[in-house]
Image (cartoon, rainbow, N blue to C red; front, side, top):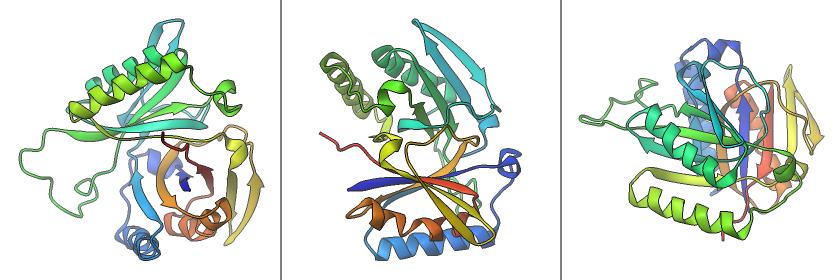
Amino acid sequence: MRFMMMHRTNAYWEAGAAPSLELIARVGKLMGAMAEARVLVGAEGLRASSQGVRLQFEGGRRTVIKGPFNASNELPAGFAILRVESIEEAIEWASRFAKVMGNVEIDIRPVMEPWDLGISPKPAGLRTRRFMALHKADAASEAGVAPTPEQVAEMGCLIEEMTKAGVLVTTEGLQPSSKGVRFKLAGGKHSVIDGPFTESKELIAGYVLLEAGSLQDAVEWAPRYGAAVGCSELDVRPLAEKS
């Protein structure tokens, strides 16, 4: 089974602070341990919301809110990583997704690249960058209601087009929060809250995708992950099975 472990941001990171070398080393050590244990699938950090946009679609109308933005409904239902030349291009692809799915809210934020951290130089001639387009949960997705066959077919065509265009890096859906757990961390201790979750009050700062035999196996990594990134809250959610 695959799981998504996501941690929350705070005012410090939202102000545009850069991770310290110490933090980068801690996270790198954890990623190495997860890779050695053969559980690591992928991991990304996100730039501050000031560099992103929030898209709200209702009744066929689109509202674009430029960042920074506050947390509202911060329960994700799924996401896509896009490689495009501009955030405007990411907005247009996300709008096509919304046309298939209907009323939805989508946050688009740049993914943290190695050259953003000063780990490596930006490749010469690179004109694209990666963005996360994260769509929010609603009552239907939290109840586990599946998309209609028509939506599945249309989404399949859109995914195929995006893949051929070299835009789509990856896409994932999440199972309802009732199937996950939330960790609260403070003072070196943690408490565990079983889902379903209330909406979080903080934006997502980053995530890890991992392969584990069960939710409990995935949860074993949560305290180490929380300590490495220095967060106060993180969620562990199972990913939807891919057909």
